[in-house]
Length: 343
Ligand code: FE
Image 1: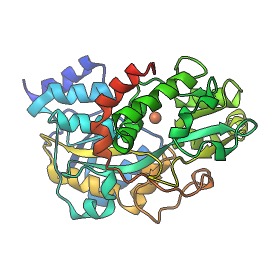
Image 2 (image 1 turned 45 degrees about the horizontal axis):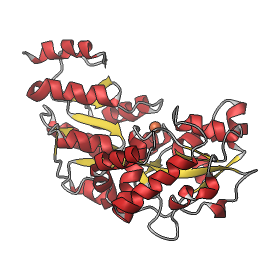
Image 3 (image 1 turned 180 degrees about the horizontal axis):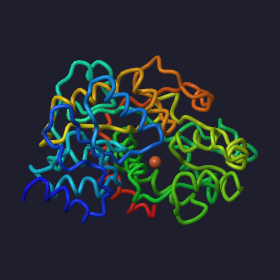
Image 4 (image 1 turned 180 degrees about the vertical axis):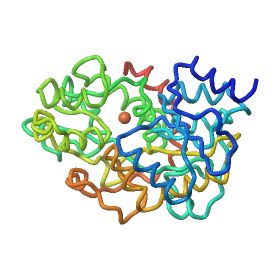
């Protein structure tokens, strides 16, 4: 099949196509498949075009359909760069053979070692911590210093977290697996399941709103969901966020679990040089601000100014476990959570 036809058939995957079909391996062009889209994207991409003269053609879609599209297109894919959230997803794309290594001193120097693939296939460009949120009227932060402490019987009926089917929980549990081993991790997951105030439903923001409403006392969520409520234009969001506090777990030992938004050069990138240039651009101070700010994530390089809301959460110690390790633990983590009754 010709590339042109493949691009058209991309519509059959239910993917929104914004890409100009005529531009494939064209000088001055970059084809970006992005499963991460925020309101600062236009500035982020426009600025790259201004700096380099390389125009970005973008395909925006949800992570799984985008990976499926890359797979189906095979060596005819126009994709140069693939971007998604969660190391588990980008690692899965690597394992499927959809990505290629990008050797770049700039990337190796800018992205901390634990936030990139050891073989240089994918790179984290922003980070998020999976933290404990608590209702200040009901819990003292000193009562929940660690992820492990959430499994204590005293929290029975007082905890909320989304399903084990969601990759954020698989990555978190994958990090516990690396730290504690399978038996202790399963006992932990059993404790989590036993403490839930209700069967898991909804996303992280739903858990946060529920604890503010008093339906439970504690939840697990990624930092940007909370920061986005703190900076929300809606007064009710800011009011409910004000009832809650954040604990960065495991500060006295391995540190808090951090995950990434990451990017990689696609296996059959027609514009590989431009692809590497774009990834390098993403670690520049200017781009880091756009990239992280769009979703209240943390930049991966230091010295970038944080939003006041993110700043208000304070500094914290990160778990230095390489993201590929917990990403590769995802499948086993899911089995463990299943066995433990974490729905
Ligand atoms: Fe999210």
